Image (cartoon, rainbow, N blue to C red; front, side):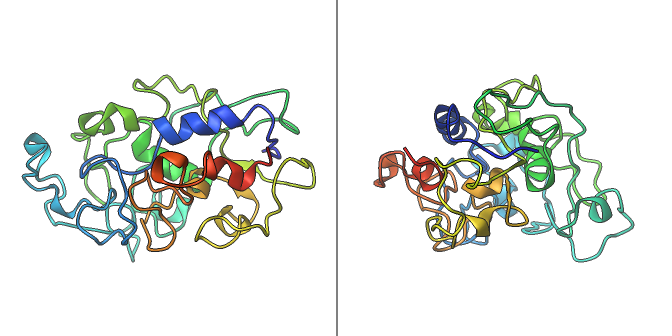
Length: 246
């Protein structure tokens, strides 16, 4: 992994926000900021059964699970999911190999492959793993492309190329780059920048997006963003400038 530099990453972050938001498209493309249990929250798949917008996909979550699509309180002898990934993880992760972001402006080598939270996100969002492949279910029938091609990372057809996506699974170190805000600076309503870095140091998808659509953290009407952009009545490039000094 590397320390992230602000130079050369600004436009890539904008591309990430526009094209690779983590909110699931079943109920639309925007979070509500009221919690994942709220009907219509992007990652709430409870009401997928016979959904009016996508009736052909109805029924894959036939038990109307909310949390179980991603988490489970007991491992159910699925050590390859739960034991390997942590966070009581219950969903198949991708085995794809990616071409990671690389730039001469980064302070060190790029990450070799996605890790941690980002790898979990890609378990649905890279389009190679079916959304209904969780717990003991074989899945394989409902993919991200069945919902919305705009939510496949990267791009609308998987080629493993993350070179045009804001770098993930890299160390955020303001001591190596004076153009980064200090980790102690605020990140919207989510506390400090350090609070949204995995382990307090690694930038992941979850650094910019609150996947649980929590009140006070995810900005309502956005793709689960932690800080509003101008299009969402926020500061111009507000999310970008939360980390980058420009």
